[in-house]
Amino acid sequence: MTDMPARRLLLVHAHPDDESINNGVTMARYAAEGAHVTLVTCTLGERGEVIPPELAHLTGAALGGHRREELAAAMRALGVDDFRLLGGPGRFADSGMMGLPDNDDPGCLWQADVDRAAGLLVEVIREVRPQVLVTYDPNGGYGHPDHIQAHRIATRAVELAAEAGCPVDKVYWNRVPRTVAEEAFARLGEALPGLPFERAADIEDVPGVVDDERITTEIRGEGFAQAAKAAAMRAHATQITVDGSCFVLSNELAQPLFTTEYYELVRGGRGPGDGEHGRESDLFAGIGNGDGIEEAS
Ligand SMILES: [Zn+2]
Image (tube, rainbow, N blue to C red):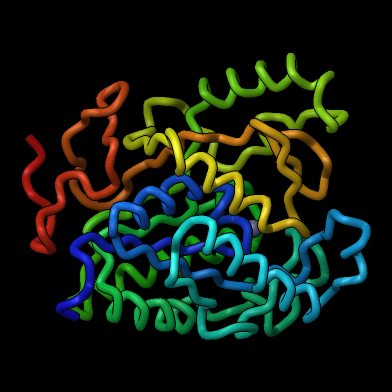
């Protein structure tokens, strides 16, 4: 792997669109800086609700196929070439929202054996050898079974990869600081009369909101990365409608589009904090040239 870039980032997500909403700025920035960015998506999201009426006929496998194309378009917008479906396209079915009968489908991600699914991700880790992995918190950010399962698979894969001599130096969970979410919703409330959306979501609808003290890292989206994120989100047209600084999902409740992305470091040493509030401004902070973590100064 002599031609592999020095910095390698792996993101593990549940459905096409989650990567752009959570990490679009981060992915665009690192891809542009020449890092190797790998996205592993666990399902095709074929049980998602479709927003545009003209695409509402898409369900099941047809929707999965369409969302795969949306994902490819989003990756073009972010400049990311390496994106994969865990175990290949269609290996794991979308589990649907928590509590639905879909959760019992033996082929769905929620029913998957975590160790076996993690084994598939270990194969990717052994190939790409990422220093940094990004995924959700244990609640999947907001309780969707596929997001919870993506967390479990990613977490187990990091353990198994380490045992196989292929350690991932740092693991981050996607986060939003509570004060940032509160300020963004306050601005959204003021802007709402001029927007094409009738109502705003609640802070509780935003995945991964936690008290500010838990945030270790922030990746700012100035310039192109911000625009790339919005373009990537627009590419997921069956799932997302973007308008300026906010967007809606199929519930039609407006949410702020965060142009700075936040993380909580949960594995590995924290690098130098040169960002706001002493936070890291780089997911690779403190990592040497593939030699593991350097001492944080
Ligand atoms: Zn999702």
